[in-house]
Length: 70
Image (cartoon, rainbow, N blue to C red; front, side, top):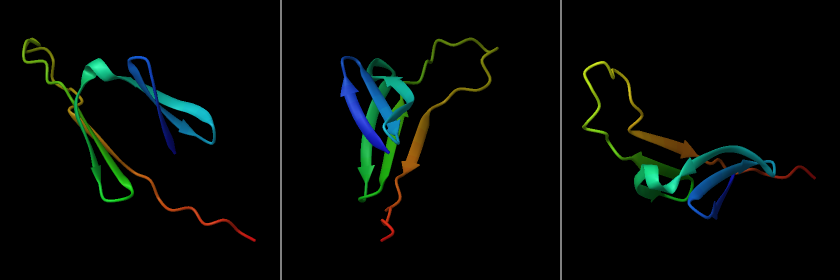
């Protein structure tokens, strides 16, 4: 997995193809945890009504080490 920052977006690439994209305006904080873990924290919308039951607050990724076969 590779990360690419372009404009106001953070793009996650897998095998050179876009897996998904996150708007930087939606992020409140990013953290590298060790060499292989990335944590993205999103802004919390405290103006959402009571009907809003689920919301994404953070997501973390483990980027494992890949060994090449010879």
